[in-house]
Amino acid sequence: MPARIKQLTTETLQHQVDDLANQLRIRRKALGVAVESAASAAGMSRDTWYRMERGETTVTIGAWFNALSVLGLRFGIGLHANGTEKVSADSIPTNIALADYPQLAALAWQMDDAVTLTPREAFAVYERNARHIDKHSLSPDEKALIVNLQRIFA
Image 1 (spheres, rainbow, N blue to C red):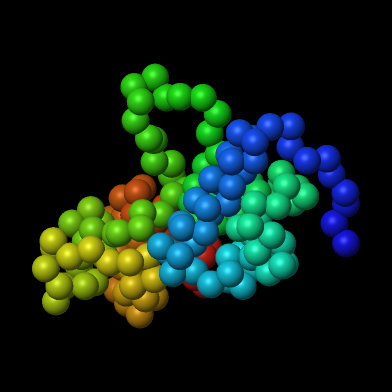
Image 2: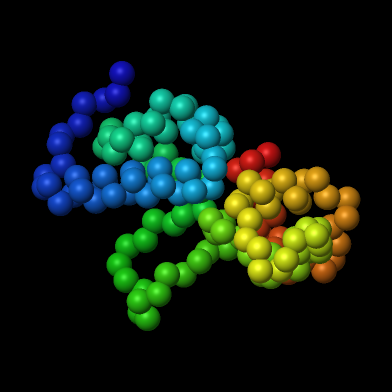
């Protein structure tokens, strides 16, 4: 049974927690990741993940950070100086353009370079063709993409 915790002090704070919970749910679904897989990758139970997606404030901050990390999201405080969103090295785009990842494009040679794949589709291409990947010519971005895809889908 979760510990009893005081309600958040303002309605605004509860809305912020609800927004964070909604972002987790949206990102997980955009990546095509099942709750069970996301929870397992984050080292928590399925029930804890569901509680987070409902915006329950009894979930520990560590669990929230693990969930964000698994989905390639980062918790931010404040604003960036130029107002843009910085994509971190541990993020996974929801649409992966073949043109941005040369090895993926080479593995999916039958597709047009303008094609975008879902993370699950990109992972399947990398996994199916792992023996053909030239590891020495992978860009740092593509290496990070492969590692992050493996972390979620493997």
